[in-house]
Image 1 (spheres, one colour):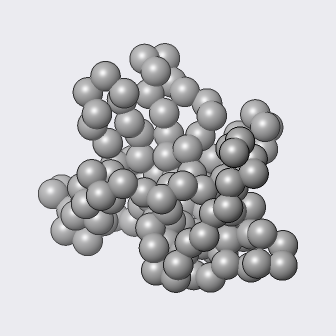
Image 2 (spheres, one colour; image 1 turned 180 degrees about the vertical axis):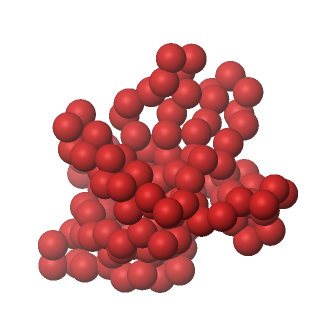
Length: 125
């Protein structure tokens, strides 16, 4: 079975991840983490609530929190764009979102950051 033919089923409240195909200078990748609100089976899409954008480095296996997107608009995107988020990715992210180590304030430009991430995604595909 090829990647395009796989059946993706996500349940409500599950945390999913959208990996950006664009990587940084040191092989770092950006990831959009979101909570599933619902799935739209007729169009094979997923309705999600963005949570955060994070960066990962494949050499160190660290996930670095970048942007809090909880104030950004909800998205409806093809289910095939998403994968299940791993516990090792989600736990540090949720910890940072709900119990920040530093006095972080929700990003005032979260909508612009989200639009840029999605535009880059479609531009590269």
